[in-house]
Length: 554
Image (cartoon, rainbow, N blue to C red; front, side, top):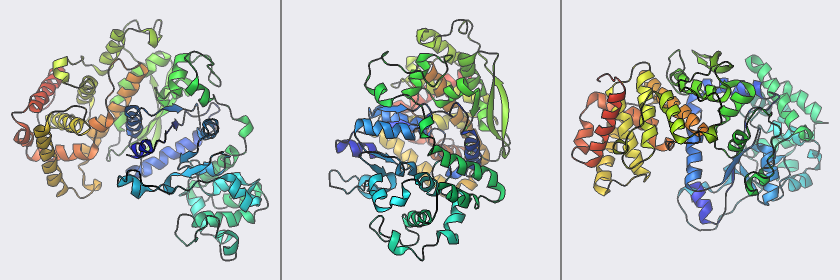
């Protein structure tokens, strides 16, 4: 909805994604810290398919996007200045950068107008300019690194214990400075309002002799179990804003406007990485997983909401990742994976494994035939490619069914027919909702009636995620992992089969509720859909899966 709102106003958005961990591994300690933080706050974390879903939306709306080699902030600053446009972000780093046409903070947008669908009514947008800030507060000129750190960023979080302790300490007390700072945003700085912390930080910096003195004061608040981690984050945050001369990246503007093959810039990637991989990385066509494998021989897997099982749900998709490793670095080199084991982050040595013969002798994926690429996918998923009859109107059905067959084969605890029926009916329902196919208004009404009954039944019995049956959560988490890494493999192979749309194949809330009701009433699908074309299609897909995998009865 947000992008459509922009497009209706003839505003052309351009999206920039962050890249991989830098060559010097300076961010690795912070990445580990973020991963552990995610493990502790899983219910608040972004789902692992969110980025794929976002990219799918951009592709459908034909919105351009690129990816930085590493950290994106300075690339975004340079690109905005080259394109002569403002930056829209929720990252407070952009308070520090000199962006000619300004920075718009994401939270300042008129979300009520956007979400209620107001068409072309005029709205007021607040744009920040660093020149205005320095004019009002000249003492910030050589202390911008301190400002960006004290406000919190993607290195040292605003919610960190260190910054929260600092905000509530005497050195951030505002009692003597209301006149000096209260009008910085030309609005009152009442307690608990969004800009209250900004005002406190500005006052504190006004009394700091220099960045080093401020850094030492903030270091004092790095205490307790997270002292080492938060101290590292503090030092790194200050360093990022003071090492601008050492920053290297390719020119995003050149990539956008040049013709293929002209002015290609390999730096800073080593010569062992093929040009086409770098190009696909920068165009957002392959995931950071691929580049981290090639550069660092290491991947840190994103844990997800998966119940209390000792083993990570990503164990289910291991053989898919092994196929990716084999294509990238062969079968002899060891890759280190970091993944959840019980409540800790452990490391596991992995090697590439591939059963398709001959593909590693002279590996150059762009020159592979489509048949060979599909053979690699089929081999990795241990499943044949579904026929046109089984796939129905949607090309992505092929990969969806192959993923489902793989998941049904390897998931632990084992998947029964109710799990399979659940993902199949979810696929049909959300394909219709997203207009991927048009089954007709009468069938859509039947599907919506089914959805309503499922939701009403489950909502009366499931009060919160804590009450979800753990095995259901864990089993569908494994399905999600299979979708993610199959999509990575398919993208690496340059999509010989159409990728699945994550918004169609995985809706966690519905899948849980549907499985829940099927265990109570296994005739509910037939009750709503018997006799219509989609019911026939459902059974064709179910038969294909039963032919490829031995599935237990519910």
